[in-house]
Image (cartoon, helix red, strand yellow):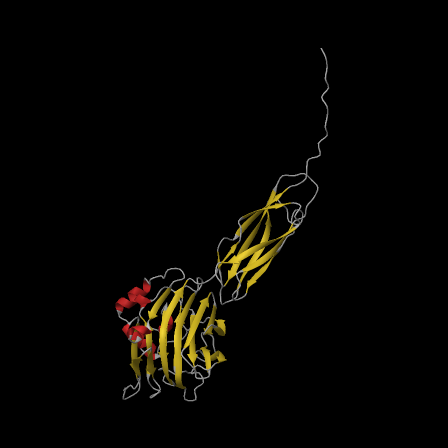
Length: 371
């Protein structure tokens, strides 16, 4: 549909030239610090804080019926009265931190869908959330009364078609949603319960239908909340909106230097996360010989460690192969690599095998002579 998402395009266009300049120099948030983009306790709509608001009807006679009203403790956005209307909030780039999916980020928003009508079109929704990182990877998530689902991206058949979803009553109460992005994975949770997960998308193959207006799916660090289609409408309650950056867990060895008496044939070594993650993280490891030789002084070992949501540590078994030969202390190392949904921290530990064999000396008495 050629007019689809024209509201989002125009909203981005209305964020002034200085906003686009700020986009190129987006402010980075402090590590694991949330940026509050909309504080509903302040008594204003999102357009009075960190968002721009736009409502329009692209079809003659171009009159809109969409409304935004603050009614404590939420803003009520209503596009249900006229499905042709587009209306919603685009974040002001001066307020948005840089979103790096490798470092991870999490969008938190309070939402209740009062009603929704998609007029028989199962690829449209009256309320959507668009979240894109600095490389324009991200997700467009659609909300129905009984389902939350994802719009298909580049390579989809077609783009903006109904992809993975989960049955969920989004009308029951004002719900605290958290949309977590780490690496190439997203996870949506509602009131702390995981609902839906999958891979990030890009939507860059879509072309805007009109002239020089910018493409919202080509805008880094993008956040849109609202109705971006003329084929659906909704009434929603919107509460606080915040974004937190640098949330990906750091994967590190527990110790960098370990001494192992040769007589200890087996021990356990710990790999840690610095913080629990809602998304499963993995890392590969291998033992590398130094002056100690694999399968002569220690058992060669490699594999993948999996940190399920909430876990903070995993163990690796280290096995030695002692002998009876006197020899100098010998070393080998454990190396971590290829972390997925996590950032590598201290990735190497050095093990020193302390030899416990005494040298086999012959004792000779000196020959004493008299002059």
